Image (cartoon, rainbow, N blue to C red):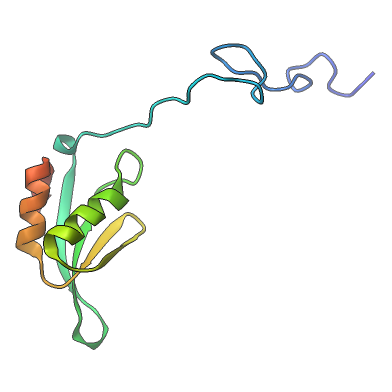
Length: 113
């Protein structure tokens, strides 16, 4: 007799929808959680970096429920500048507060700052 024989830990994991083994399951993955822009507030700020560099910073949007890389690409193309994504914070090189604000409002986000 095995240690966990007959307990839930003895059985391999199964899909909750179809009942097949998880390795053999063909169910589609659940749709990703998407938070509409109207229910989010983006906070804008301008920060100074080393050697006097200026960066426009967008914070306040969670990583889950948003496609932050796509949003960053859109904002960079609107501003004609480079940028990066660090820990759910969008950074765009330069002083582009008005352009970023206008684009986020056009998408539907509430904007502060």
